[in-house]
Length: 315
Image (cartoon, one colour):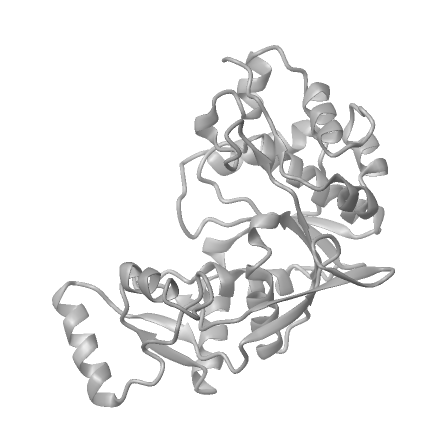
């Protein structure tokens, strides 16, 4: 892959189905912020899990239809397994990896315990001795399961440069400090975990600006810390408000006519989609991606707040 001269922003969908309006709006925002800052813009298909045949091609076609352009090639995570294995091997050599035998139910129960950080792994398997590990490993094997691999984190929190959601620190940006726990690096089924893959891939694509939904804000300190451990550059972050349904839940494909094809079937033009994305953020009712990129600034996104409700038209 040729080096990119100015860094890059990115959009990284999972090919589990067509993109819905919230996904499309985030892609437009990511492209706009990269364009304004004279960065390249790259696409990564995160296809390690939940893949629907043909979904990636549909997603790329929808992005192009809206007027979003990107620097080739498109990266596919399933072609990156050697890079993930090398990073995992490096961490193991530094004694920063350990086996975890916990079930999802056990982890959820532990994270709900008093004084535990919500959703954080409490380190149940971190300090087991050799005998305890052998016993737990054998018990999993009897169930046809393998242990996951976790990071032996050396800190409990980490600060990132977050341009939208963080605490104002300087005129140019903000800081956000969040929990760092012993994140999964490789799942029990052998699949590399999202947090490791995204760190390795962002570095490979020279991504120094990550724009994504604010539901992923708490993941950023974990990923930034992991990048620092691997001596990789740490990007700046822009976590943007979500699009939600009438009940206030994150917009999903089950909410009706929410994909580009469904909206067009309801009589929406591509320009109508872009206009809704713009006005939902308090921007002028622009009708092209280029015009969206001109007015969708960090300052406007901070003012917009969120989340934003979308009432899907009847299909």
